[in-house]
Length: 248
Image 1 (tube, helix red, strand yellow):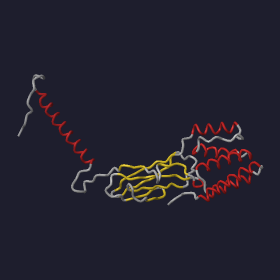
Image 2 (tube, helix red, strand yellow; image 1 turned 180 degrees about the vertical axis):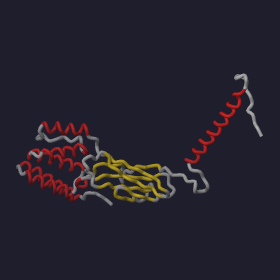
Image 3 (cartoon, rainbow, N blue to C red; image 1 turned 60 degrees about the horizontal axis):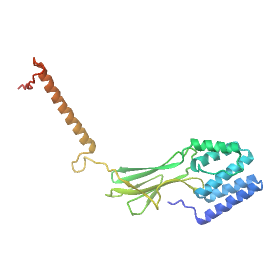
Image 4 (cartoon, rainbow, N blue to C red; image 1 turned 120 degrees about the vertical axis):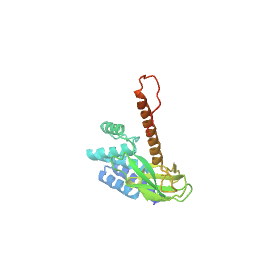
């Protein structure tokens, strides 16, 4: 699975965004929105997505569509909080955007790796996507230097007896633009596997069982000590030690 915009699509997207700017300059606001829709449908990269959403803010400000202005500002605050708004943007809208940026956490990707018997499950989760911009999450995993196995949202691999796996997780949004990533196919993250122990293999004890036995032994020792102290408590002289009584 690969979500990569082709060179032709990106070039086309540039043309559509340029056409939207031209239409806006000529006060053809509906034509500008149509050009922006075409750009999104043909595919954009993160920089182009920022330009596209910023242009939508401009057009909706001119149309007086306050709800659309707010929604697009929210989108910008979540995936491109450092955006410099154009000079045409009114001061009140700039203030609104700054407030949204200050109260919004940026979109981020979190990866969970879990060992399940001879399998390893890798799952990607998007954090802070309050505007539900994520369309697709692509997750990849492999043994170091091996072939990538990929899935949407998660992937399960059987890595064998290795200590580590390599992973990446990427979130794609409108127009196929990359919104957030935790590693990449070219720069994956190496993760150490936490293997589960089992008492069913070779008669071994799991970590939990070992801890339980240690706690039980400590409890028995404590009971013995208490019994000795109590037995010695019958002496007339509380300072005189007395051997514990053993009855048969």
